[in-house]
Length: 533
Image 1 (tube, rainbow, N blue to C red):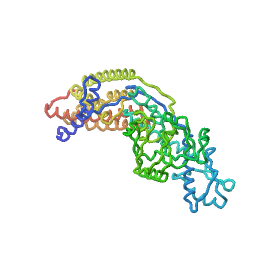
Image 2 (cartoon, rainbow, N blue to C red):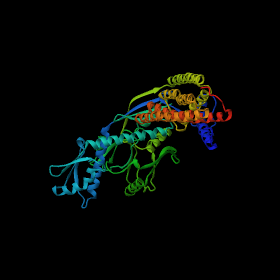
Image 3 (spheres, helix red, strand yellow):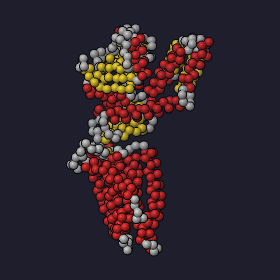
């Protein structure tokens, strides 16, 4: 009981002082004292309900996912037929009614065509992606299965959540809450952001970048009426361009998509002194771009962003190396926003803002004041009760309680946890429960003394026997809090659970291990003849 090796003392005090040091920047942020910039400064971030900020609810249209799947399937079917030996000719391709249909030259080609598209029909998952049927002897009809549609929507929304997260991180905001709500909605909460205009513009931008060849067969009169040649599609020029209000026809299939990008940065063209966005393709995308430019020197290609053409230059020479430059009617801010959007990846589906609200910091400041007041009153009453009831051992419990509060703050700062209003409730609850361990230990020591044990034996047995009950009780609480955090996913409820887990862990450490070390030191030095418990 009285023997505490030096390494154990260093270990206990090292953990305690490290956590307290991590709590100092957060404590000083509440005062006028500035923390030195040269030193690490982990701080506890405040949630939307405490710091104020912006709340945005985004909604996706699942019909876009189905339409994109049909387009990808058509391109895959055409590629499969072209690779067949000999090549299988198809015609009368249609994507009406959510189905992909096409015709082959005659009944003799049906078996070859079916074999060529079976990998597309079966897909790579555990369930079939398309139902295949042949009607009128030569027409193939591919109908997406409901399981594949649901899976595609789920994947698109999961991808959209990650893209939204990367874009918000690119703005430099801290600790956003981004969670799915239902099947097609995403909740975005950004603490401290009082003007959500830039955020809405960035999240509402799909950032779908495409490079497609211009169809030079299109007649100006047809373009004016929105009529495209077979196999092509009409796109409008983006607002702000010199050709605003005009249309252009591009080859519908083929080209390069922006998902091959590995980097995008805003910059300035030194020759024209205008803002531009420099992009870099990955190896596969760079090779495709080099091939596209090499095979089409002297031809015009369109740079399409979110369904509008921002530029339509000419391939003057092959573009090798996988790098390109996008120029348009950009400002410095719009070029920066576009670079963030392209760097984070294109949204797989358009997101529409269906709800928006801004939360002011006044309510949060009032909550913090009341939370601190409740914490102060609760701590005072607990301290008074412990000292009155247990004397010296109550003082040790009080010291452990104060260190417990500082350690919770420090660990929250180190793991970059966000403190919400329910988190404050978890904080206060943890303080109230932190001395439970000391109550169990002290009462156990009392019982041991009544049984006639000597002081050192009573204290040692009290800590040993009470520790079992303390561990059993707190482990069950930690399990419940971890499950709560896992189910909540994100947001205030998760914040409550995290604070509770941290508080339980630190309370065990301070109430059991630190107080035992202090009591051992006192017993070794004072050699008391009686315990006032």
